[in-house]
Image (cartoon, rainbow, N blue to C red; front, side, top):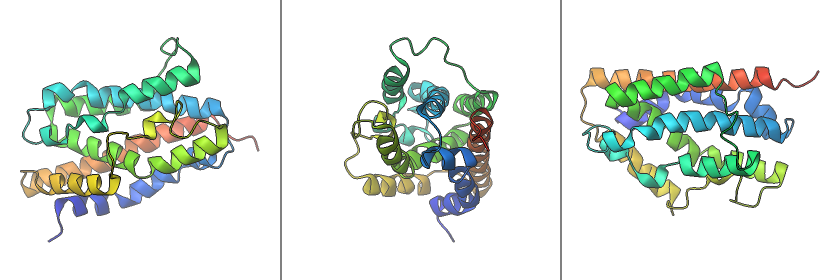
Length: 215
């Protein structure tokens, strides 16, 4: 029988690929969109991570979600530094979430407040993605817009406190495999992973509508 981490990874693979290959991300990573689009995307991430990290103190003692609350993963401070670089010191003024982002952040908060297993699903889809595919985004952004390597503008993608990402991800998957939940609850968590990817893809779709390539 497959481990829980394998079940999650394989069940959400198709949607993971769909998110990574969305038109907006393809255009952004291909250098066909400007820094304004990159900045807008970074703004949307702030709302999602504000929701994801807002409940960490409360969840730290939870037997299911608690083991996943690891400060070396936290991204909000890095995002805020990036936004200050991209938008200036008054970056909070005029910061707006797309409706798709609002829906995504609201679901994360709902899980954080009432369903630890669901919170783990969102935690997994975001942070393991950042540690993996996020490094491709950082590299492309540095080359496309001239950010200093691992500097302001791309700090969101730099995990300074994780010396060995591959080993960290192995440990993370071991935590998933150790989650104390019955098969029904695990299926619910897997379904929430799929939902998380769908919510993320909806944000990409909305950004694509805001930044369409001229024909």
